[in-house]
Length: 314
View 1: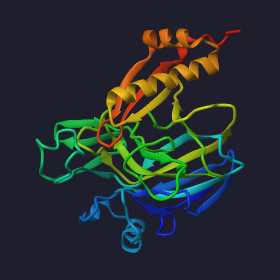
View 2: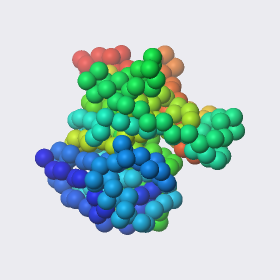
View 3: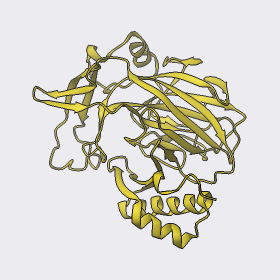
């Protein structure tokens, strides 16, 4: 088991960059316990601070263009461009029994209804770790659904890529299904993959309509493996019950098409269906869901129930 703490030396703030030097190297198959921090910029909430987070806020001055604190990059030995990096989420837990939810003042174009709710607002929310709920209000408990909003490898192009918008490399997916037990598959563009993670969440609805979830500092255990012969252009994910394809685009209509095409491609490659058969099957069993509508490139995920394909197929 490797451990990667979030420190001023292991955190990059607001961007992916393929030229970032790895902060840790691990062999394929390794388990890595990784720590991530979340904090509302420009505020003072001692309840959200750990000693480690205070050091990061005080010492990391190279910020932007995005808002997220990311831990990494992690170099996975043996991973080459053209491979797929498999990231299995063994466990995820909050570091503190509190999170925050933020509507940003003047964040034009970010929240879905930003013009109707122009004033900034931050609410701290207590986490009942025993009952696994977020205390939204005295009479409202929100079930905890703990996941990393951002998981991604280094992008294919040079220079800084904002942590805000998802892309072929992953990034700000905000996919609520990526809880413990899920596996994320990422196409690799650079030696070692150079994986980074952050944007901890303990509750979010599909859509994330006002821009944020219940944002939380997290500790998670991830297992990294190499997959070959799995030709994907964008992230995919696997649950015990479903395969998931993802589409990202400024237009939700285009994101739907991308996610559907990727699911068709997976079915034809993995299960020997023709494209026409896969298209028909998608119409019968695939559920299309809005991942998020606030990250610049909107997200759609297509969920295929694995139970419809017999394990005894020839």
